[in-house]
Image 1 (tube, rainbow, N blue to C red):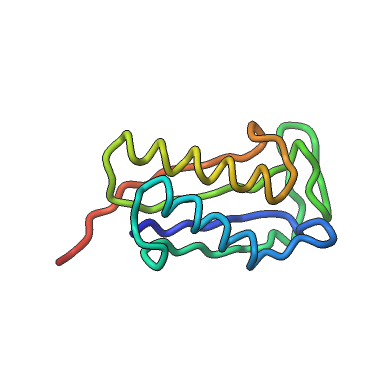
Image 2 (image 1 turned 120 degrees about the vertical axis):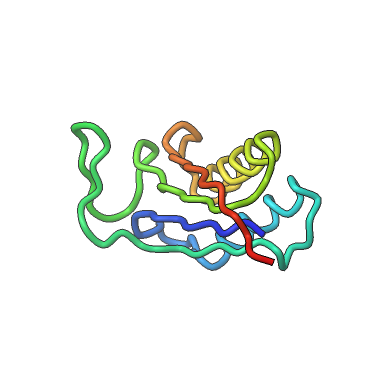
Length: 113
C-alpha cells in the first residue's frame, strides 16, 4: 500500500486538489496492477514561500515550481520506479506543470504483519 504525500503551492484556478489526489491514486494503482483502495494520497498546500534555486514563488504554481512528493512504500526497485513515473505523469497532466519540476522521493518501509 503506497502512501503518497504531495506538498504543493495553492493550485491554479479550476484545479481541485481532491481530484488530483484521485488521479494520482488511479495512476499508481494501474502502474502496480493493485486495488485502487490500496493507494492513499494526501495533499498539503504550501502556504509560505517556495524557492527552487534562486526563484521564489508565492501563490499559484508555475511550470518551474511543481510539487514535492514523498512516497512511502514496500515495493521492488522496478515497481518503485513505475510508481514515481505514474505520479510524475499524473501530476504533470493534472497541474499543467513540467515533469522535471516535480520532485519525487521514495522511502522504503517495512510493514508489520
